[in-house]
Image: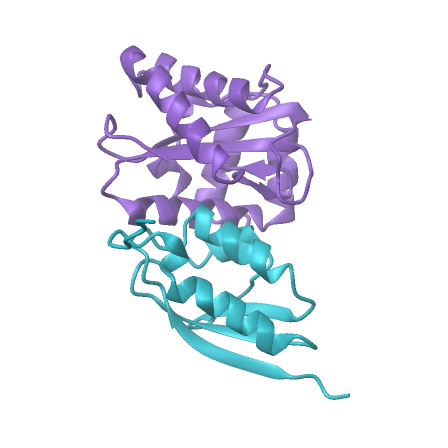
Length: 99
Length: 158
């Protein structure tokens, strides 16, 4: 069985960047999957299942990153991680959450 | 960013007495107060803000390290301190390990970049196993200060 390897480009859109709470969300989400998950910023490549690694990216708002997933559940894992970025880790100021 | 840019040397504690999350945060905030980095009137508000942040998810990031932090309007630049617990403290870390190394950060609300760069520095240096090990073994404030200086001078990580 060949391993699936997928990648997608995401942008950090929440105003605080990848600080501890978003990193925590990434790690918790990534750890639900078996696949090997990495986040790439330029030459840097870090394990999406380690907060310490994610912090080394110092990803400010506007930073473009590539999420890579390799493994049996790569597609689902990639989708779940990219969704976090797209939602701005639920830290977007203008979200209206009435009702 | 270097440790010297945000760590208040006088507030470094080599032997934390506290054994709970809140008391560690308070002991470190007290150290910043004694070092003249925060004012007595703001102490409670800072401790509360840090604990409120912890409720959103522990800042125990694994490998026996925690980075309790908050934004606070009473500071006009990023300030922080380092403390070590001999026994380790249960900080509800992601990996379930007790925490021995604490980096407490207080940043002005409008400076997310500085906060991220401090986290970057801490995590980069801690990736070095020797730095981590030496720091956990440090016995005095001077030992810790010296290790942070060496790290700032790239004695450890490449």
